[in-house]
Each structure stands twice: as C-alpha cells, then as structure tokens.
Length: 488
Image 1 (tube, rainbow, N blue to C red):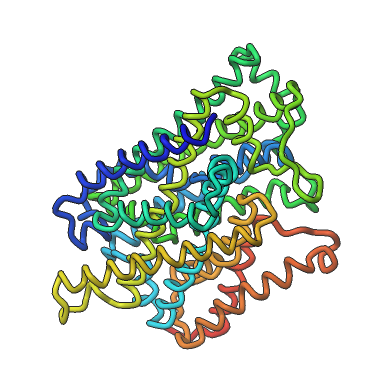
Image 2 (image 1 turned 120 degrees about the horizontal axis):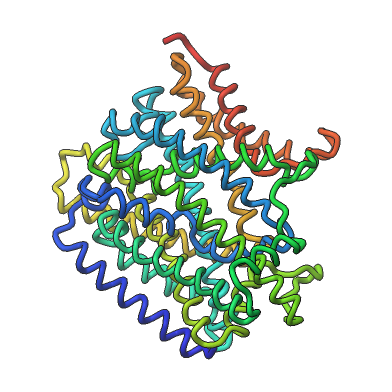
C-alpha cells in the first residue's frame, strides 16, 4: 500500500471528523464542554466509550502481545467486568448524588483542599502519560510505514495529529466527543472484523476451522497458574478489576462522559452495556492476534526484530495488514488505526482541560469572570495541555523499549493507586484525615511500590509484580491515610 494512499485516507477521515465537530459544536458553551449539558444519550456514550477505552494500545498491542502472552490478557478483561459493576453501583451513585462536574471535588468535600488537589494532580500525571502512550503507538506506526518514506520527521507527524485533535475538541468538548467517539468506534470495529475475515479468506478457513486452528496452536492458553509469573491468574484478574475501577471509575475522562447522561439509571445502563461489549471486542482482538501469528508462520513472513533479537510485537499487525493483505485491507487498517488514535487523545485533552479549569482555577464557581472570559481561559489551558502531550510523546519515542500495553498498565499501577486508596478510605471509613499530610502519603506510596517492584525477586522468593501493583499501591495509600487519620 503506497504512502500517498495512506495519506489520502488520513486526510479524508479527518475532514469527516471536522464536519461532525462543526455540527455538534453549534451553540456549545462551557457546560457543553465539561458535561455535554448533561443530555447525552446513554447508548451513544456506551458505544463511544469502547473506542476511548480500547484506543490504539488495544488495536496494536493486544494482537501483538499474543505472541508471548497468548490469551492471558483475557484474565485481565474478566477482572474488568467485576470492576465495571463496582463503578455502576458504588461510584456512579456517589457522583450523581453530589451532582459533580469534576469527580475529584468529592475529595474536597470528604477530606479537604489538599486531598482534593492531590487527587486532581495525580489524574493529570496519569492521563498525560497514559494519553501519550496511546497516541504514541499509532503515530509511531504511521511514522514507520508512511512518513519515514516521505522523509517527514517524527516530531512533525506528532505535531500535525495534535493540532488536528486540538481543533476538533477546541469548542464542543464532551458534547462533540460523544459523537466523534461513536464514529471512531464503528470504524475501529469494522477494521478488526475485516482483518479477521481477510485472514480467513486467505487461509481458506471457516469459523469452525479458526476455532480449531487457534485451540491447537501455541497461542490459546488463557489461565496461568504459576504464581511466580506476572501472568498468574489472580494477579491478572484482580489487577484487571482494580484497573477498571481506577482507570475508568476514578478517571475524569471516562466519568465525564458517564455523568453527561441525563440520569443515574442511564449512566448505569451505559456502564453495564459497555462492559459486555468490551469483553466481546477484546476476544476479537485476541483471535486476530493468534491468526496473525499463525498466518505469519505459515507463509514465513519476516517480522520486525529489535536489537535483542525479539519480535517487535507492536509492528506485527501493521506489517501484515499493510504489506500482505492487499490495498483494501490496508485502507481499513489505516482507518481503524486512526479511529483508535483520536478517541484516546481527544477525551484526554478535554478531561485534562476540565480538571485544571475546574479543580485548580475554580472557573465554575468564579463569579468575578464573565462566561466569555472563562471560555478564553479554557482555550488557553486546552492549547497548553496539547503542547504538553506533544512533548511527552516525543520523549517517549526516545525511551520506549517494550510493548505499549505493558508500559501503560505499569504506569497506571503507580499513578492511579493513590486515587484508589483515597476513594476507598473515603467511602469505607468515617474517619477524617490530617489533610495537609495527604500529599506526602500519596507520593510515598508509589515510591515504595517502585522499590518493591524492582527488588521483588530477591525480597519475595522469585515473585514478580504484574497488574496487581495497583492494588498494593492503593493499599499502601489506605494504610498511610489510616496513620494520619483523625476522628470524624
């Protein structure tokens, strides 16, 4: 597939997004930007959240990781389902009862201003790096397969994508994202399904043949029972459960869309519907990953190797889709890839702007400024965070040496853990805390976790931490808050 054709796909898709942006942002105000005027249709939010939740990480990294992790990622996804039930029946009722625009304002009501700012700041750190991880993987694929050939520097590619996202989220915010995410989710799912169909057709396989082919292969193992491994079932399952609670239920980007629904019942239907679909979609990605490796082995397709002689798993899907399936497959792959990239960055940019404007600048309660003045400040913050994302993505290009899915969840374990501890302590105890000491507790907890993780083999008889690190981090934060508690 030629570079010029890929470029045409990117431009055509972007034009379609800008049309939707123009249509949805007519008459938009600050309330539209933050919570979509609380009028979003729950089924649109549920469907669109699939794209925002999966992103380019799932689109590229999950199929690629099947080569080493087999179907082990499904253990994490099963944990997600339990986490989403907790979100629907514990967190969402809290957010609606308090009528929150920023979910971190709960911490102010419960503990005090220092806890509130700490929670919001940890979200900003988490979301900046998380969004950079997600966007990096997509931009990097386009860079390697398209823009390197055109001699376009990586930083220019990143800048162009950041500017495109900046433009279409600049005015409408959540009101726009609910619709653009729906479109992007559709194209991403079509791309995955068609990729599976292309492989089946090329290998002359029926659905039954696919099942037996994967079952008989080395890629089909789901449950891992060696407690030393990061893929040990309890680590993955409970890690997935708490990752869902933290990265969705305690994440302003994801909850901003949920609380834009008209009622709590609509928001709950949204989360539960979303959780069922997310299971099916992740199974599709794992099936695709297994078929990609089976196809590559059968046809002796050379895959990209890193300096250590290992397959670069994040390049497996793009290599086969763009160079071995034909033009039609390549077009749908590129559209699916872009569809996976935009939701992860547009929602992050909107949420980061919302948290900073609401939680640090206090724009919603500031009666000294007109609506026009608040909008101008919001625009400046929006541009500032777009610039920060650009810088972090470029830095990540220089240091990345692992599948992005692993980097993403490792970072989540360190940064979302304190949020998990804060909300757990607030919800399940009646104690107050010494508010000024909360930032020190929340900073100390990830540092302790990093030390334990780096030395776990020596300290714990060969044990390696995996996705369960987020549970340990939250527990250490909880204990720290207990130590600085005071009676209600």
